Length: 241
Image 1: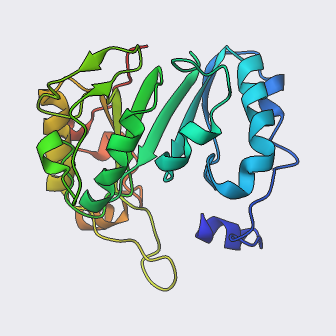
Image 2 (image 1 turned 180 degrees about the horizontal axis):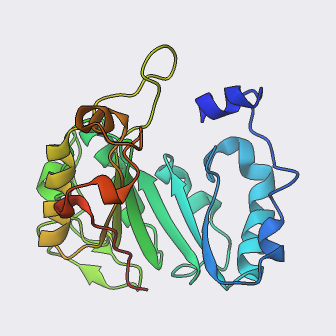
């Protein structure tokens, strides 16, 4: 985001309501996925004054499915519309996880009712495990959590109950100078895939990142062309809705 904002001569520290894109979904008639706030965070405090309008647009476009990703899961509950209930049918809620330390965001997301809850493990900059036993960074994992339909669980199982989808991606970045890429390891990706498959959680490998792309000499400099990957990494599954 910082790199792209700089490219367009924009201040990355200023949160703005887009004049051209904010109301665009109202003009889209075909079904599709909408990734919100790719340069910001839907639940950032600076967007509080516009969020109610955004929820209204989401309600008026039930044919669109909105993927809302945040690094601020602690703010989700206080920012939901009054009629949220067990979640809007066309909204998926997710949290970003870059490293094992950031898995602390998962329990907070799991306590928010939603039709689909997902993890975006991107940019993956270290080994990550999403099993309940691994997520113990100085606090207790809830022993009773709810899924998106209101069902209650007392046995979390091998991986985090309530996770409906996992996205994995290595970091894209510059080779030198500002915004240099950080390392991503093939084994880190494979370990997360193994955990997801063992728990029957759909997984989507988005890209390998610049680090692996340079190591393997792929044509796509960020490792985003799935045809250049070994078959065991060519996994692009979606959640069942």
